[in-house]
Length: 435
Image (tube, rainbow, N blue to C red; front, side):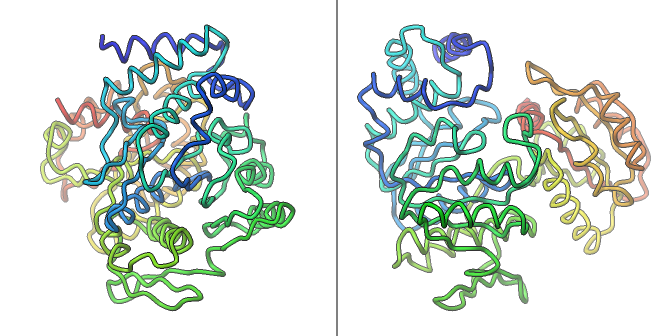
């Protein structure tokens, strides 16, 4: 086991709960560390239910195309913990090196003195240490869960805040209505700091705008103050400053066009003279694994039926299911193939809500487990949820076994395979693909 992994394993045991939303513990630790969160580069703080990571990926690509050095903090990771922390460099950001990470984690562990603190809180403190001690032009900071009492919300003076689309997710922590969840997300707003809001449903938008008004935070609203659409194979963005004719985003799907529009709106507020050329380059170079990622070669492709089209996405809630189903329907219009879902979900997620949009679209679902300590739903339960939604389904012991099962069948046309249901499952698939 690497020293990094030994440290992370110890930190997991500092609190009896995996999630315990609070600011007190991390504020105590940061104070002992000299308050590194008060010495960060300009922060763009991002909350929301879906699209946070993709919006950050677009912004990072745009900022780097403009010649800026960019720190990035996201979660969860897919394969290696280091994915959560990207250190900005003049030549482009890099994932934090093990030696730097180990040193920061040990400093946090020593300063914490064995006090109760969650894994996310203490590792966020380590990230703040690294970001404060390595100069950069910007920090793109993703909320872990919610916003109001998320560990990242110790940052009191961000340059900009963003809320991506809000929907029902994590109701056990954030509330069981979209209004309650929106209020938690709005907790990242700061007085006088512009909040960029992706296009929202009416109930979420009403809560977000009301809270922004209460604290005098200016808002820029998707669908009102800026808009996007596709026209003749181009991506058209429009705001009060005019219309931009841009290349289509590299990331696939209509929902990614919405995320790209939010990123552009944010960059045009972050820097009023942000170069259009950097927006263009960022759209075409943004990369975010396991968000409709095409697996064309590697071990997964080798296991799949010949000439199959394989897509990997970490979508895990109702809105994610709707977005993915829309993309699959768009694909079907252009190129007809039987759609097969390989799906594994967490026990805490509404599996039927995720799968409902695929009724009449997916020919079949093969349910697989999520391994490790992630509270995975059993394949039998996932298959039953699919059947309840009118999707023929069976269970398999692994993604590899599911692909081998599909390969043993005769196909009139090579299938389109979508592997989805959880970012944890997506991480397992990416590991499998490296074998």
